[in-house]
Image 1 (cartoon, helix red, strand yellow):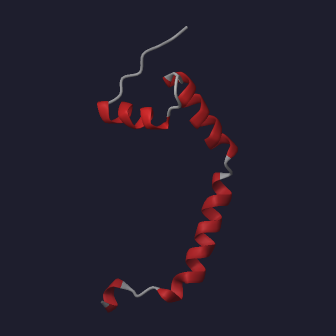
Image 2 (cartoon, rainbow, N blue to C red):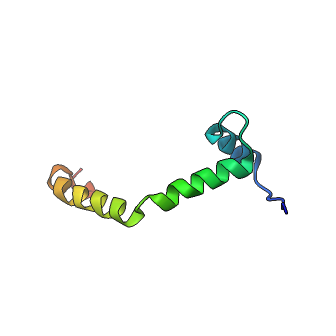
Length: 65
């Protein structure tokens, strides 16, 4: 069973950029969602936060500019 999902033309164009030759929108979306599920998003966020904390000393506060 299929269903229609309404998206802006820009979203459709971006989705096409992720597609491979001969791949349906259903296949593109499933592949992208599978990739996201495989990622450990919490681990990525934590790693980036720790990196920012280490680099904090390299930044100049806006009020000092």
